[in-house]
Image (cartoon, rainbow, N blue to C red; front, side):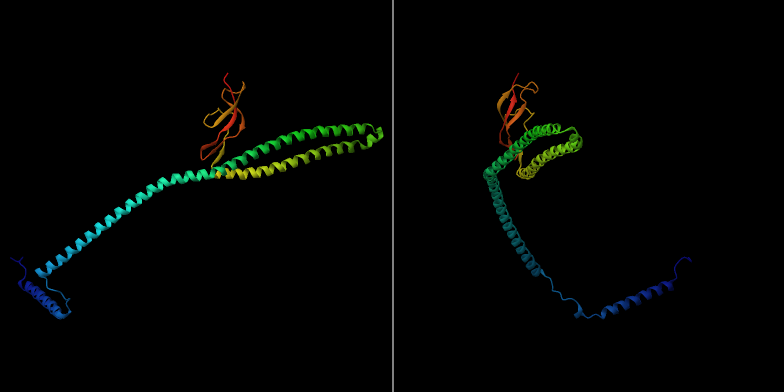
Length: 262
């Protein structure tokens, strides 16, 4: 029976709890009723009034949402109609723009063709003139040698080195002068052609490469059939008039010479 708690100890603890609770209640009593937040009494009438106002607000929101939805649907229909109209107008505008640009493309192609032909003519003239100069220089060398041989032996012995040096300097100077003239002209052609090539790349203009390829009726016109055993039948051996692509489409057919069937 010694395990039971002490009655006096329990009563002392209970007395302390009562004292603490009384002190807390006394501290709560210090707050006045006026300090409490104002509140309204809630009854059935107030509850019905608030529910009616809430229902009215919900109806207004629903009506507004339906109006917004109808306006959005109308806007979407208008946008779809405008998009369809733009889709129909864009191809027409592109076709009109391409048709308006065709004269410019044709002028660029004509300029490129003229420059290529002009360069070819200059290179042919360069080869022909240099060959003629070689012949003339050889004649001059022969005339100088003939004049040198007519001199007495003692004079030939004195002027021999000078004669050979003079002859070589004259020949080298004449050839270099001719080469410099044509090299300067071709360099100017290179600058013009490079600028034109950049313009052609910007405008998607491409010159066809036909030589050594099979004749293609979709982009080439065979103007002459030749017999060349060194090439297979149908191979293009010469380009009479170049062809061009514009925006990956054939703008002008190429005129070529091709090997016939054996």
